[in-house]
Length: 287
Image (cartoon, rainbow, N blue to C red):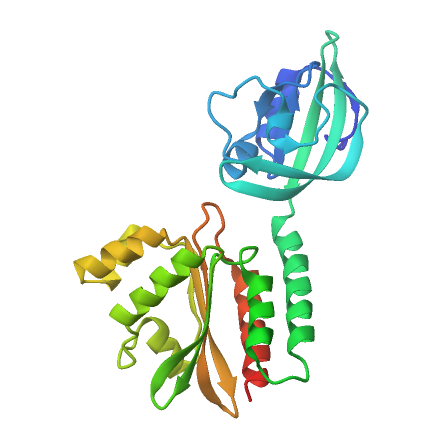
């Protein structure tokens, strides 16, 4: 069977699209003016394309993509951008001519965001480890770590350590100073209940990270019964949360927290591993 993704003559675009509809890879079709005229079910779902398809240049989503027809190419990097944010993709393009002379271009798109994210996280971890290696934690060192994290990886970043049975804040970082002041007031009004088995207290007791890839309104309703506190938390617009334990001398010495409030920026398993690795480095440096 011929590879349907190489440039070739086809009986008709209608028949080709029937084949593409059944494939487990995202495929887009462009007319000879470079306008989007087809998306198979995988592409519509994975890239959240509106229905019916708007007949517009695919470059509105695929940043830097040539707006008109051109030669076939294979496995080129692009950025896909929509309301959900940016994604790293690899694109292969074929030019197909039907028996009736109609020419169109088909794009095979693979989402590489997870792979790219892992590369970015490795860079983050290496930078953080370099700053932490061989030193004891100082205010300056913590500030440098915070600058690595906010805002590229998290909108909010915090480090808290256990001292004399209480949580002591070492870091509370955000891009906007007024929000930091607000968060400090919130923490003073609603301190962590260390007797609880949930949330940050649960991480401190068990050493198991708290990982919430997608925070929902229902979760907030269930977790916070105080109406004023719940209203304050809802104002933050939580999207995703990771709280990982800090370990020192064989015991849990504190927690490190990452919060995303950006639409479309949801933490995944790669992010969780990064958070745990960073927590390990910080725990060692705090010794």
